[in-house]
Length: 503
Image 1 (cartoon, one colour):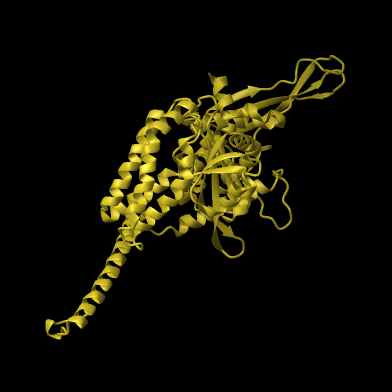
Image 2 (image 1 turned 135 degrees about the horizontal axis):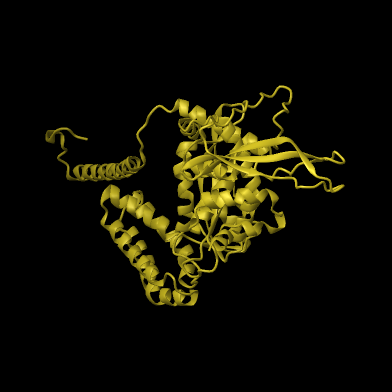
């Protein structure tokens, strides 16, 4: 660029060429400034204060590895210790200050063989640490050892089934640990410190073993929830990245946690809502193909290319998401104050106003309202966007948002004619939000099995929450019953069945 007016050429043609060149340079610079401002605004919204977390990360890494190991290996007796494997921490006595609830399981009054009277030889006492919301208690299960006075036959009542065989935790304590970790985002090493303040010594490794074994026990119930989700006419799909430890490398790679949700509440109160989570080591298209192998129906989703094979199969039909379209215009408006972006947001708000009116009505009424009120707004938006695109530079963030909207609106149009569909994919986004918040506190999946344990637990907790059920109360009841429950009747333990029983 010329630094002084004296350097300007006198030839009009040369001067015109110089002005044209400068105008082109300034336009490119303006576009670059817009992009940088857009990126800076995004960074400011998503940036969190940094701090040193190396020790916390080490604790979390160990925690997730131990959960994965507990979920993979069947429970062993405390006395067993394979060669080369570190022996488990020694059990410490439960604190004396905790209240005791004693239950005596008598073997009977007479011998079942000869009818002779039984004489008491002693007692076997099993102590179980239980958590009742707000306090710890110890359940003492006393089983008198008796012998027949005539035939000397030995008699003793059997120990009731428990969630973890030969383990000390009660179902309420297991439920409390699971909910604290996956719903309240409290890592196990922090829970261990909280328990220590209560005078209870529970190592992080012990808690990790409980979480892994509980997830393995509850897996059939999560599978039942998955079958319920895939039985719906329309589902909602989303995914989020999680870190997976790479064995031997001491590093992490990016895995994925997927969610498939069913929520027919806006048009049908009969079908319970549910969320089914799946873990995968990558984001390849074959993962979703495996998850949805038995599904046929509509699917609300973002523009992930991996879904295209499912759509081409004809089994799964796509419904795009208006929330994703709106979000791109919001980002542009916040960073640049664009009038075009503001107008796009206003038009989208008019479509959501129609949805507010249609919510809670039967599908045929919803479709009729959309045809009458939403379709003209939708058609006008589709025509308005290309006209705006022709008037702005194609390299700006606003142009990118408009092009995305034009592409996705074509795939969102089916919702106008079908009252069982929604305008957006917010049901799945709400279900994945807890994972996005929680992963900052648990950071890693120790292995593929550890990731599956997280997916199982998220499935149970989020589905309970969607049905307005306290997940801790339901899991306490379920963990107390599931060990003796027949697998072909697992649906009886689903959260909405629990709610019906409580009612």
